[in-house]
Length: 599
Image (tube, rainbow, N blue to C red):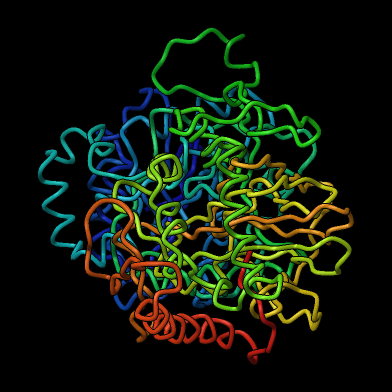
C-alpha cells in the first residue's frame, strides 16, 4: 500500500516468519472493526517479513480494514532484530508499537488503550502484558497434546473473532501475580518515536535465533532512559498462538533457549537478565478514570517481605499460606519464617539426632547426607507432616513428591560455607515447579551462618562453575559465575521449629559458622506430583500428598531406624540419585569430587 496520504497517529510494526496461519489472525485483531478505535484515530500496520518462502499478501491483509504495508527484510537472519529496526525506520507515526512476534493476537481494546496511556506522559513506556492461548504455558501444554488444531477449536469455542474480549477465558498469563508482578518483557511495546530514536531501536548485537533476550533488554534499556515512565495496561493484552516457535515448542527447548539467551545476555551486558519489579502506573482500559488517579504511581499491595532480618521477634507466617503470603513467595522467591512445630518438639528431634550421632562417634553418618527419611521413621513422618505440607501445597498444588532430603550440620568455627547458587543447576527436572523447605532444629541466625537469599532472583537460570574450594558444602562445589550484590542479600533467620521455603531458582548461600553455637537444619526438596526427571534415568521419589502420576518410582517407608531392608533399598536409590545429579553437573563442566548436597 502506498505511503502517501495523511500521516498515521500510531504505527504497529509486526515481524513474521512462516506464519501463514497466524499472521492473518494477528492483522485482523489489529484492524477495525475488531479493534475498537476512536473514529478519528489513524492506524498503520507495517509488516516486516523475515524470510518466509512466500511473502504475505498485502491486499489480503489490508482487506481486514487497516492500512497495511508488507515489506521484506533486507537481510534475513535467525534473529528478528534487523526486521524490527527496519520496521521502525519505515513507520511514520509519532507513536509506535512493536510486535516482535507476529503470532500474537490483540484483545479488542488494546491499541486504543495504549494510545490513551501514552498520552498520560511525554516519555511513556507502555507495556501490555503477554498471555498465551491454551490451558497452560505452551511449552507445558504442548507436551499434553496442545497443538494448532486444538487451538483452532479453542478459538472456535469462544466464537473468536466475534468477541475478542473472551480471549482471556482460554489463555494463561505469562506474568505472575498480574498486573503488578515482575515484568520480564512486553511483546507489544509502545514508545513515542522520539524515545525509539533515543534508544536506537533494538540492539542488533542480539543475533541469537528468535532474538534471545532482546525483548527484556529493550524494556530494561527504555526504562533506563532519563525521565521515562512505565505504564502497564490492565484489561487488554496480547495472546500468543502456537506455531512451533523456539520458546513454546517444548519444555526442553524452552529451558535450553532461556539458558542460552541468559548466558549470551550475561556476556553482552555483564549481568544476568532480570524482570522489572517497578510497578509503574496502571492504565485501566475502557474505564473512565480521573487524570489525577492515573497520574499517581500505583504501588504493589501493602505487604512487607516475609521477615525483617534485623528483627528476631518477627511473627511467623501461618502454616497455611493466605493469599498475601503466597503473593510474597511468588514475588520474592522465598518465604519465612513459617512455624511448623513448637520449640519443644524441635528440641526433641534434635535430641534424637544427637543420639544417632552419639552412637556413631559423635558425627552424622554419611547415609544421612541424602534422603535420610528413607532410613529413619521420625524423619519419614516429618516430610509427611501436614504442618509442613500445607504451605507447600499452596505453592505446588495438591499432588506432591519429596524428591530428596538432607541434614545441614554446620559446626562452630569451621570454614564450611555455601557459595551463591541456584538449586536448579543439578536437580534435572523438566520444569521449575519445585522448592526447598528448610526446617530449623537449632537457631539459624547470622552469627552461626544462616542461609541468605536474594529476593526476586528466581526468574532466570544463571551459569555455574566449580569453585575449587574444599570448604564449599555443595555436591559439585558449585557457585554462580556472576557477581552477586551482597547488599541485596537477606538473612533467613529461623528459630527452632520454624521453616523457610525457597524456589529452586532463588539465588542463595550461607557464610561459615563464626559462633560457638551449632547450626542444624533439615532440608526437604518438594516437587509437583506430575513433574518428570529430565534425561533417560528414571528417578525415585516419595509420594507425600495427593495422587501418583507415574513419573517417578515410589520410595517406601522404613520399618525401623536403619532397618537392613531400608538400608539396601537406600543404597540403590542413592546410586540413581547420584547418576542424575552427576549428569547435570557434567552438562556444563567436568564433574568434581566435593561431598555435600545442595543447600
